[in-house]
Amino acid sequence: AQTVTQSQPEMSVQEAETVTLSCTYDTSESDYYLFWYKQPPSRQMILVIRQEAYKQQNATENRFSVNFQKAAKSFSLKISDSQLGDAAMYFCAYGETSGSRLTFGEGTQLTVNP
Amino acid sequence: EPEVTQTPSHQVTQMGQEVILRCVPISNHLYFYWYRQILGQKVEFLVSFYNNEISEKSEIFDDQFSVERPDGSNFTLKIRSTKLEDSAMYFCASSRDENIQYFGAGTRLSVL
Image (tube, rainbow over all chains, first blue to last red; front, top):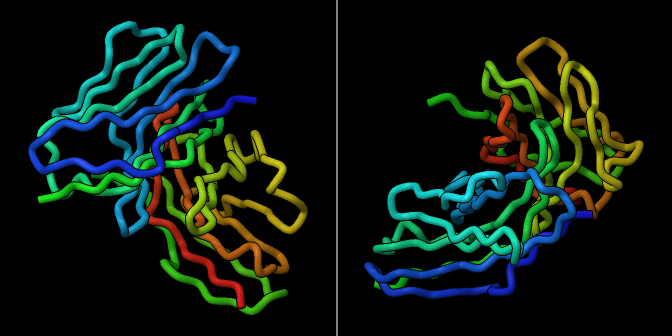
């Protein structure tokens, strides 16, 4: 079974600084998707960014970017110019074909200090 | 922007009672899902639904759970006889064809 591991239960960053959240996963598949979701105190799950495993280019969405290392099965999230509104729980998730389940990591609680 | 809508936002029930959690997925989406998150824990997959039938279910999704798409827009999760350990946040999600799953705001279920 696929597993997703987030080894940092908590991280903190100063406003305007950069922070990187780590994620590793285990799979025997060659084609899959990886995601980062943000869960603020409201507990809504908000998609931050998505990476397709067949694409070598790292995904970026404004201040959010990933470092996808397929051979190492690593998928980290970099948040640049951190803002107070970035404070949330961040979940890394793995999925396969359309319609398949997402497997989530344990989450990393990010605090942004003013 | 289209979104997944869940009702109610908070449901309180007595142990042993039946509850129905409701979801309206994004209108042109084809795949529907339920997940749950016990407080302080990771999000766990329950079931996925496609073409009016269950396509995958987890070991959590036992006989006390059922799902239904009764009228082409709503997608419901029924828990037949609730237990204390069913207390959790329940998320509905939907996707189209690239497995980008969009989540609703969740229903917090409290079983007393």
